Length: 125
Image 1 (cartoon, helix red, strand yellow):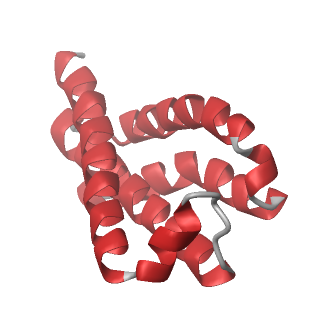
Image 2 (image 1 turned 120 degrees about the vertical axis):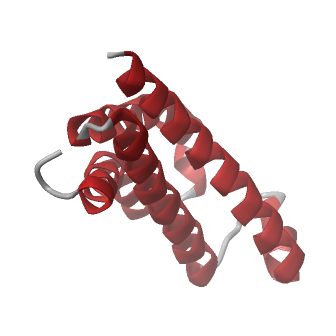
């Protein structure tokens, strides 16, 4: 069980570290994104980019969790923890984004983490 907990913690650390790095790169390469970030008046391409970053970091978090913890089902735990972390955040910014954006992000967390875990360890782990 210790390896599985370390796997979940590692997956969460990877999620947040990758999101920070992606955010820094995004801001350094896309000046219009920086201008839109103040009031969160993101264009559709900006929203899709944000969702893509979330998807890739969630996939990576699931993969890291499964690799460290040697358990695919722990990747689902990582996804569920991400969901619990982000529900309050999305409630606080609910009026800043369309409902499809919130639902896409929130409903993808557990499945993408599971897929990342299965891709990393194979279907039987």
